[in-house]
Image (tube, rainbow over all chains, first blue to last red; front, top):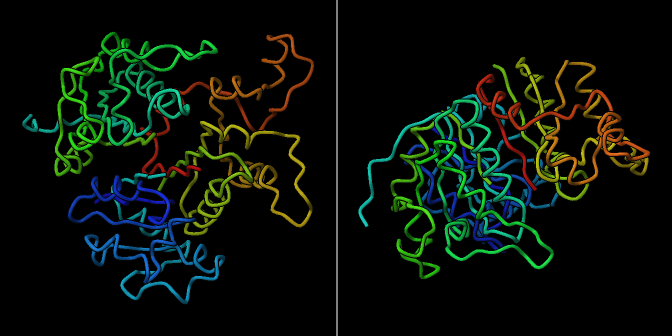
Length: 96
Length: 125
Length: 130
């Protein structure tokens, strides 16, 4: 299982499509930095195929005042959870 | 073109940026060459705008900036012969196999995950 | 586990260095070891010893140095990417006939081979890009 890390929002960048194209059926996707914009209820449709394997970094949501708008389908993790995700994955791949 | 069986190796370098516009492509190719010089088996995957690294007819820029075509020509010398190119990105730019400066196996999107799983290390540029 | 980080973003221009430092402290708090941070692309600017951010902002250069002092994390900078961008240590400044330098220990200029080596050495290599 690979942990994919995406720091671009689908609203302004198509990089998320590269990440989605590269994801295997058990791979996970973590949204960080501006990538967390994709976790909002109004944006999360772009990640529909990821299902329950979609994560977003809490502190990047909170810093942007967006934690209240994060979609319920997204698993929000703190930075400790970010480390845990890297522990559980065989390797990580960053998309930027 | 049919998708070949993805290979396995030590390092997969994924190149997603076109020549000249940024240093990502050059820096990714440099990492691939160094890894190969260190004896690692290296695979390159050109996807998104990165497929333009394979376009024929590239030249130096107006200030003499080299671009990456010369580096691409050095890949074989470093025994980097496992080159893959994303079919959807080729189509996006209206490119076909005969338009490429080096032979690269066309890869369907579904095979990318398999290629990634087969490599111990992945670097994206 | 043994971790390595690859930082490709310049300090203050993007969030990459902030994210990398946050991740570094979190992994260390969980008992992992951070062997090395490798700086590539515009990430080489993290090694600028003359960085003077306002006092009410995080001092990223000092934070990297603290990582080295407290945890022995090596701070390695790609020499090819650094020299192009004017990031020279004393030895390279002398070699190129320049009168000043902006890279000092604990940062060290090294070849790209060290990144490849890092990837083989550690259990997890995590990239932070602009």
